[in-house]
Image (cartoon, rainbow, N blue to C red; front, side, top):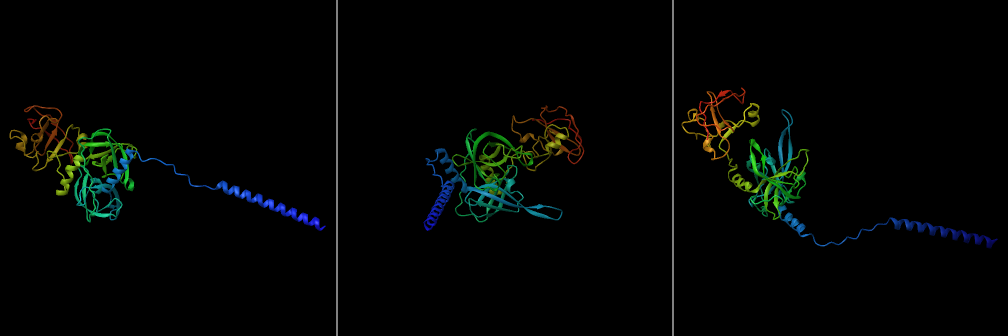
Length: 373
């Protein structure tokens, strides 16, 4: 009996040991099947020469790019308001702490802050504004000693298809680099006062809100334009960005630094809004006044009606063989100049010009003789 009991005990122990072995094997298998190791990094050679050049260009240019934030007072009611925060881009112009950006980035701001590279924000004070060119200059209140002005290039020899890079802060994402080509040249960009900036650069380098005022650079890292606007029919970037050419920037910025304003090319006329003129059924430009001391002020021959009425003629301010002929018209209560595409001869009769009465227009009849050039 004892022998039988011992055999049964040994058999049970063997079965238990076998069962434990099986369980341990299953656990070990499950553990080994779920265990993961980091993948081995595949070796690669050096960056392509073009990639190396882009990286080097960005690293050399990024310290000159500014991240600009603004504070504006915004009315929320008749007696209430709050502070609206805006953002844009810019770049260091010189070692004295002047930073160039778009006028629409800083215009109307009560405070402006500039952050360079990865440093702390520095307050800046306004220096000059040129809304007709959408350019502005601010100056750092405490400029760092290691400022790195951006290298200046030229826009005179740009070619369509040339590779360009835009650096800025789209949507507040600092130090963002996008790359593309020059898609077109000599575009016109509408700005303030019914004016246009000519010679604008079109690029497919991604430009988004927040890029305004940032640099467009060539592959040599030189500034060739100031990113200013996009064409976005659907409200998002579609590959149509526009930059003010650097040759224009290089003329306007020194004037903003020295005088706080930029010379505005023109003959000194103050036109009525084009849409108001069109609603009145008039083709051309209707002039409601001239700027004293301008080329348009007091420059007409004594034989013309404008000499007797004390108004100006466009003739003296116009270059030869340019633009259509201006027709001078005067009335008892008002005088206007109509830039007409229909050429007329001196001494011929003028047609009656009837304008809507109101704050913008009156009715009058042209003088008996037309002054043309």
